[in-house]
Image (cartoon, rainbow, N blue to C red; front, side, top):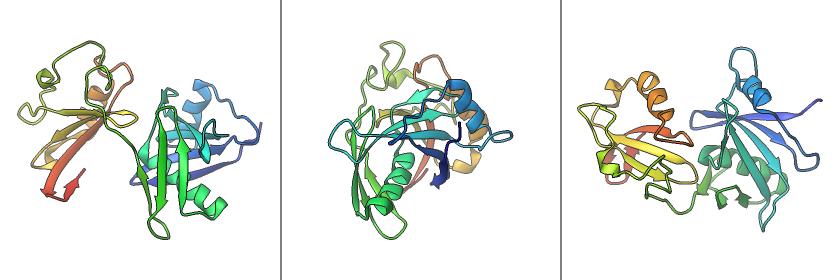
Amino acid sequence: MIVNYTKMHGLKNDFIIIDGREKKISLSRRKIKQISDRKNGLGCDLVVILEKPKKKASVFVKFYNSDGSKTKACGNAARCVAFLLMREYKRKKIIIQTEASLLNAYLVNNKNVSVDIGKAYFKWNQIPLKKKIDISEIDFKVNSHIKPVLVNVGNPHIIFFVKNLKKINIKKIGPKIEKNSLFPERINVNFAKILNNNKIEL
């Protein structure tokens, strides 16, 4: 089977986007892993499949991690999809349907797209965590035991606010936290530095 695709990136996340609106595309977990492989495949963080919308939206989008698992949303991938559809439909606003919610996307200028990712959730079962636990007690012993913030914005995130990002070995720390058994849907690991009241470095 020959499948056309578009490869895009947004803020250093890269995606393989496959259009299944006219002809349904079904990929096995093994096939998604092969596509995502950076040495032997196309290489990407996520495989994104477009389908016909089920609600009042321009498209329904499915997101798959590089290990073949499914995730409900991705802001950067949604921006890339929105950019493609805005060019196709010659619009400056697009509504994207995901398994998590409807996302409103806007063309800011010629190449920049903004996506309203909707409401943020902070409760343990909304993140979700494997069991009910006081989030303030979570400690991964990062940088003198900095307490993280957890939030779900369509997919789960854990954020550590630090003073020096250069001291963080994200390639070593990130995967251990991401795949920790506490997170049944895995989790995006973020390190942030507050620059001022209006700006952070992530």
